[in-house]
Length: 133
Length: 253
Image (tube, rainbow over all chains, first blue to last red; front, side, top):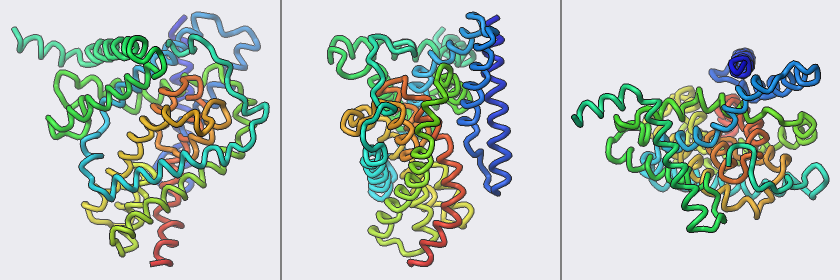
């Protein structure tokens, strides 16, 4: 059933967020430390385990794939609810600080990526990306 | 008649948001195909339209949630809010091979620490350049250049003034919005076309909404890798900025 996939996704998310919360508390910070990332790892492991045993029927998969395909529309809705006006009204200090951190961050990507090796080879081009293009 | 339509749309706000975003996507992909011959990604155009609408919404209502402060579009706040966004980000991990993540794991971790440090130093340098001398002010603005969550959390911890905290939020917002726009434009230049560089990118830039939208506009298949590291960034920033980094700033100034 489709709901099994959605529930699996929701379960991974809740478990990841709980672990992230506990990690944050252990370090004494008022924030969730990587809960979403931990949930992603959980989803990879759990679905991998189920798939190997043939326990992940197509209908269950479609419950996860629906939310995967909704990713870009959700991000567009997120963009439309950003406080863009405040970003522009913060003055030159805010704009320069933001711009400089992005420029330096982007510039460091090729430095840290290093030489192209087999594990850093581009994804093969596909006419239709999996996320519903 | 008009009133009843407005109140109906307001009542079914999430459904209205699905329709509005669907229409936006359609327009964006149409523009991509017919005006740019597919050179500019449809999702990049859609995100840009979203940001423009957010600006218009923010200016016309004076609110802080972009277009979703307009009653008719209030569902956008739920659809694009943290809950559904994180659920969709996690769903993108489905089908990712753990091997890819493991191979870039160490570089991703280095990128995380370096990313927080570089953004903080950039923010601090700008603050000092504009004449701020109080270590609390410098640290708060610098933390804002990490993300717009790290800034106010750090400012509140250190007891910064509300103007400085507002400034740090604005710096973080500029970073997030610029990342959404600049990532698809510079992706080729910085080699952002494989899982490894996507993980490093996520660690270096870190601001979740910026990374999420920037990678979506570049190549949706890179999203899980970038999101994986970026999700640790804000937590790391909140851990480092009010503690080690503040002490370092105070030692210098």
